[in-house]
Image 1 (cartoon, one colour):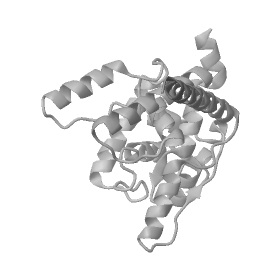
Image 2 (cartoon, helix red, strand yellow; image 1 turned 180 degrees about the vertical axis):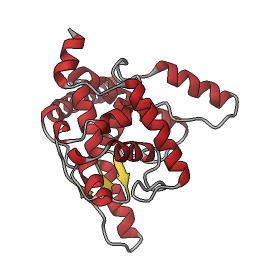
Image 3 (cartoon, one colour; image 1 turned 180 degrees about the horizontal axis):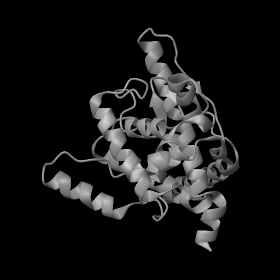
Length: 243
């Protein structure tokens, strides 16, 4: 019996080591390699087929230098204003979310751009509760730590803007620019970037090509935040700041 437990223990240990090594290798690979697909893209395609619909899958990878500099600034202004300063987790935002939950208020998400990138690229976005939800959050946190360690902020934003869902069957900056505004990502205007950014919490409900009055109000708020923050730094500026 002891021999059996010993073998099982060794098997579990080697499985865990293999998973850790594999995850690190994958993160290192995506540090340099474009991310052409994500689990969410496959899930959305499956949902469309299950409803008897034609698959809608619009996605083209482009480097961050080929995206309007206003778009990373806009998403940072709306989604994660401390993106350049935190190490993957905005503890102040998390604290506020916990307080709002305890008070029974409607709460906003506390996920950073780094956390969202880790979830988009490495996890299947299924709804879960209880212990399973905590397990998913733990895996998300693990990958967040990895990408913050092995990637720089420029790369995290680049992957985020290429994998985030931006509409029905639309993924990434280039696809939304072409499908909603008839241009390339590098030619998006400041107003268009702000409109895209404010839809990210729910891109299937809010259509950046057909904004409502509420969306226009949010757009104006986003533009004010963009003016306050100033600009999203280049990779060279990020290196100088780090040094």
